[in-house]
Image (cartoon, rainbow, N blue to C red; front, side, top):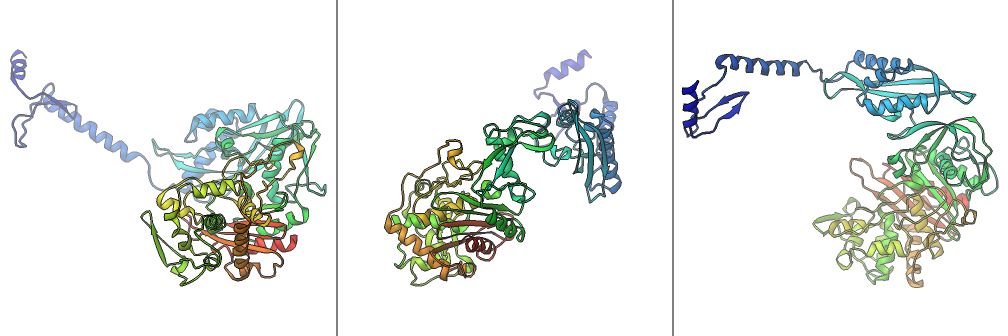
Length: 560
């Protein structure tokens, strides 16, 4: 051993660890001679054996699509453990045991649900639906509980074994990750929401109002004069609250005494709005009164999320109403003066074009607005500051300041300051601009009345809250031209077909908003008639005049 140590000390190249063995490389030009120490051939055999074992283990990890047997077996394992109250075993049958353990434990201790019976339905691919029946019991008060849910089986990341893909919605479909189920005296007394005529508003009668009623209770339950009852409810976690989701009552064990909250909704128009969106998937609409800001109707085809009030979508060419007001004020456009509408216009490195690459030669700005020529607006980008559109939306139309107080959670629109191509895209309602039907109905209402009046669902006199205000109004000349543009579009432009038969003092604008990953754009439509203004969107619907237009026009006709 002494001689071997001295030989090693004379070498100039430092030993390196290779495959768990010490090796010394002698020589250059890519020629290597390996001297092995401490084990010789036996060590080499062990290394090969270890490597082979790792490869064999990797081969043993299941992969690929799950078989029907794997899906049903994994689902049965989870459901059986849950039904038997074996929380640890049930959580271990998922891919995220910690949150599963917490929620399954709370199901019994906090939600006070007992006697659970779970019945699996027919598997569809990797998904297994199941029904839940149990009893909620709290301080001597009991009530049966039943609902349907579903789970999805996936392969575990470590071992490839089939496990339940854990999300809070597996436990109950109304739960979002981070939410909890709680039974007890409700922190918020129930409310009886009524329409402007005093009739009760219920989700059974008006399916779109489920989220609205939840929001009304959350805001006014403690001040409306009611008394809390005992209930099973969803308590929202941090992530859900950041999206302005309200706590939700799932089951009342004993009714409290509701307080009454009066809304501005018109029962006839609300019923009509519900009927309209029921005919068109993924549609939403809002109808309001420009002179006051009162919301008369709001409806969504999908009832789980209030897109009408809380949606955040690119509004497409309906945004050109705001952009036009800005261009007219700056002297960059005038209704009856010539205005460019080329096939293409490049700005900020992007090449913009019109629908079907059309152009208008020798046309006016009014013709470009009515035809919804994108390049007529993009071509003005070089003469604009990056924050011009943001200021116009905030100062004149009251948008994007996050200060609306309509009575329930809402999104007030967003027109961020952007530069280069994104700034140009925002002029036609793309880029970072985001709106919903409430916002765009308010835009038409501002044009119709001449002044921004913040929309509201509950009168501010109920709770002395302060409504948002715009810092300025359009000049008489600009407002007159803007109304002329919208009136012409309603009569002769892209909105003419939908607005046919809508008489009186009218104006409209259509829009189509491209969305990544969608084959069809979202269709938008905003319009006014006298002291009514409305806007709607049909997601993945196509052209706004053909999809959202008939919904909006029908309400304007009925309301008039």
